[in-house]
Length: 398
Image (cartoon, rainbow, N blue to C red; front, side, top):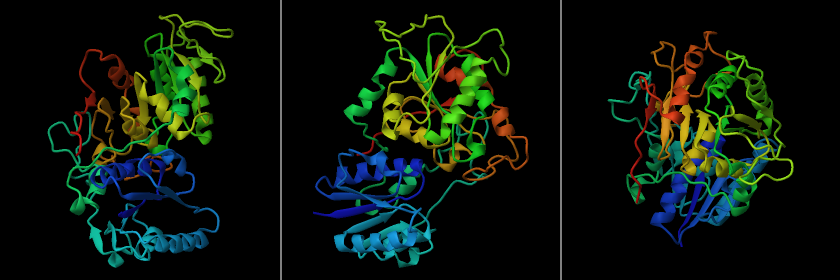
């Protein structure tokens, strides 16, 4: 039995995208033992994963180096056939180089890649070759997606075609969110680690106020995002940023959700009522959030982890790009997917691969010049000039 270890200790979304390697490896080596190493806090993404033998966890916040050496000893004892390192930092380079595996594979940008048995060029599209604006990618060849980049690591013993990433919410995860699914709904995940990747709160609020009636709107995020979600809910409910006469009802997060048959405490929402906003920030796990997104009419996200949650359960998604661009290779992969970005080219966009804590020029035009109608169009399919890109589906990998 072959033994594989995949290493990805970066952010949540990076781990989700790396699950495509698990899908591909399982397809090609169904009897192999597959392990995955992540940073502490991200292991919940892989709970109940059917193809995984074990999830190894690196605690990077407490006794970081001591825990690193413990992991190296443990990895060496397992005697892996192949260690596949998706991460490009020195610490994971040490894990890979000292793993004792028969074959160690990683990207050439890892500082210790010279000690790998195989190093693969890591290529990200540059602004010079990555068109931006409302019609970007419409006539040019698609850039290399992250799952394509990662597939290069295992191409020599699989093939050129990447699998799609996949998360596996459990039946209990679906049970947890089932009460929220009894009426038409959308989700909004407004947060990002990087400020310049976040569509502004007042812009989300203005968009919510233009939604057609009868929808529930669930604001999703981590416990640290709860305040941001509440800010958006309050702005929309207070009639901020236009439309003062059309106030959306602000419903506390613990309010029971009306089903088809009212139960005590329910307040049925008429079909022509403005959207009902519910702050679920900090109340759902990663996989519960994915389970809720799966059956939404639409999921609105930034260029951040929830985008990849949607991809990993094939949920409809509209990805809003502010300072970053889809050509970097982190775009949506769902069958039904849209990209929304500023219509006009900006000489300052993209300003970086990941984003910044504040707009370097102070105006944040890449966000504020996106129009609410662009987001609305992906839900309603309304007329007028197309300002959101519908992206065709990728063929299924074998």
